[in-house]
Length: 518
Image 1 (cartoon, rainbow, N blue to C red):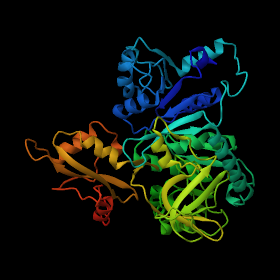
Image 2: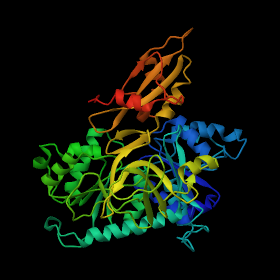
Image 3: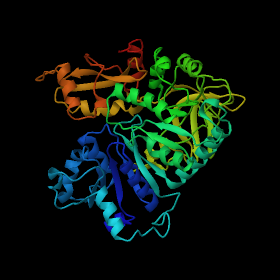
Image 4: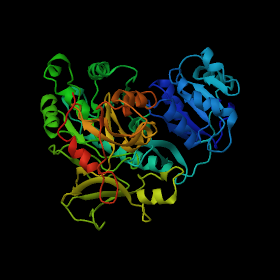
């Protein structure tokens, strides 16, 4: 009610940015209960990316932490220069941690408030409650609940629209999964069957996993242990491990890169992780031998899941009681249809034949915001099938197995999660350097099981000089640290291309195939 009193309406869109805090998540829930559309921003974004994404999505309410406030300075500076609906006037800024600092009060033309002030405003209203939920009328099929950026493989991040209907469908699948886990929970180390499930959630709130699954796990009755994302990589590893012991965590949701930490030979001896019953992973291929070591060391169940920004719940994950099989992501999730298509003809394939995975149903996104019809049809055809860009097959038991990937995204590990970065986005930015003629960016393997970007650069021939360090600094000064060229810059005379003139990305993947950075 306090947000409504501060002028928030159905027409508004809210951008969220900042660290993981209880206040942050309460404000997210407030937006959901009001029936508003909100846009989480990746914590890796710098001012450049924040400005571009806020402007493209038309968000006019900012919810941010004090630490992230500076990322919106260019947005605020444009407030008096509004010339179109794509560059809207910011009408309200909510700082959810602490008080406004002096430098944050210089934008006098924009209304500012804090989480604490919203609580005061609400108490002054006599504890009024929403007469209905959602407060504003919502069409679950056509109104987006949230907008979230996904790199795809075609340049700057695209903004996926996730409808209320999609979240309802995913919630049904999540409830089914959690009830299935609880009914099979017979681990004597954790007490009685059907005791409230405790799950670790180490993802930042700007990540699709936290945005979608935190509220869904909560309505499933799960107790969540949230991780502050303000600490360094090693500290986060240690915090997560110590939290398993302290809070008796049963379910660990983690990216494949975290698996290497769990097989540290000293870990099982030093920390009591006996409460663990299940590890859930997804987002990238998980090494089969590492998974088996985790299973043997901790005597837990291990399942791989399959989801993405454009389809939040593709498969149920491997059956919790089945023997682990690497690459098995389980059967098709409730509310979702799946087919495997021949890479050449597009025709559906039968069991045990690899092809492109296509999905449709309630779990699929609405399309990309402000994209022309061609781009959306490339993603979702006229029959509603979304082309995932992933390659796999299903077996006689209708279990889905992932085997390869068509899309060219670079997978960057951050703490215990990952982000997908488009090489084309980095290339487009590097090409703005006055000394660069051509560039191709490729992901080079690292020891964490993800990638680091490398740029192969062709210099302009006359009047320009540039070094690898110059290119590194050019990128680091403007783009998020996830897009920095940690695998270096290599100067070449020409860029390899296919017969039709496209960059031959397969050539560059093969070029770096055997490289692994520590």
